[in-house]
Length: 393
Image 1 (cartoon, rainbow, N blue to C red):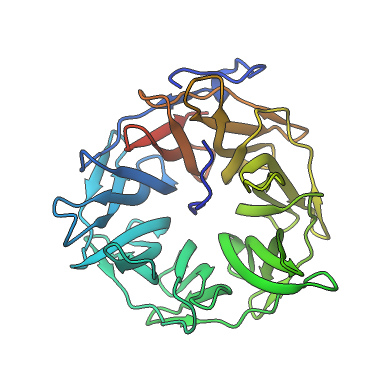
Image 2 (image 1 turned 120 degrees about the horizontal axis):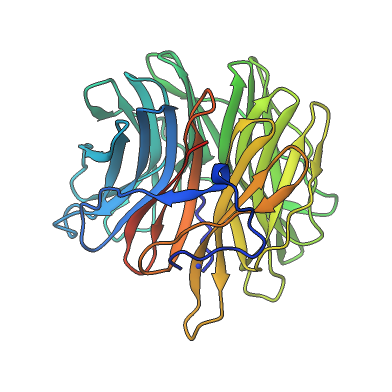
């Protein structure tokens, strides 16, 4: 339900070596709307039933100088994906990074707005009432210049959470109570001795129940003049958000997404970073909460320079993580889709397809409750078009 802002560099029909050849592990491409000939992309997906799912992102408006990027929303009706009209703000770029639906008449999508060509950002939330999407005001944050909402979970008409980053560069949580969004105070992240907190952000959120919610992301700490990324996880028990210690790799790392299967079964995924000065994403990072502690779970051997951007579960023995990796076996490196599957014992790479251009990234994944379809969405970098994959059990 969230979009990672990290982008590594991935082609049609490509399979990862050793992918299981099981029908239940097969992904197929599904046509999706592309309203612009210049730029279309999906960042997130939410599935409620086999005939009701949402995908969101952005596309380039016809008059880029006045409208720039516009919100893109598409709905699956059981037969096809169709674009659904979204509001536009004149002279503003708008981008949706996450979506969550709790009913056919209740859904939220969040992201950011900014002046066309400007660097500063402001939080954005839009609500679906069963008929139309409309912008709902979110509280302003102070300090700095870049604020955005990266993830959202809708629990009902009077209960939704959105997380992201404030203008001051700190982790941000906002709550919808049925009438308005309000900022909820978060605890300060725990940082290593001898360091100072440079920034923090929350990038993913998932709820096992209204009183059992997880949010994950990252912090950046300074030791002298050297910055290092570290993982961050927070838990909400119905009253208070608390920082829960995570495990970190021996190199800089981040968590990009989370899915709560049960109170003692939560998965968070992300990636490590290279330490050669490029700060490129390097290898997948997978962590699991067993009800007491977070632990790093071994990732399968996959190509380097990759990131996991989304994670979703049908059950405790059917969990998917998606993202992309860099294929450097070409004159010009390209992105390729990446999918990993948890069967209750191990994580394994699974074959996926790519867009016609081959340069394709997956940014989000969602499971249909009750063991239905699994959806993964993203975009083709070269063709700048939306990309959707479907896994049917």
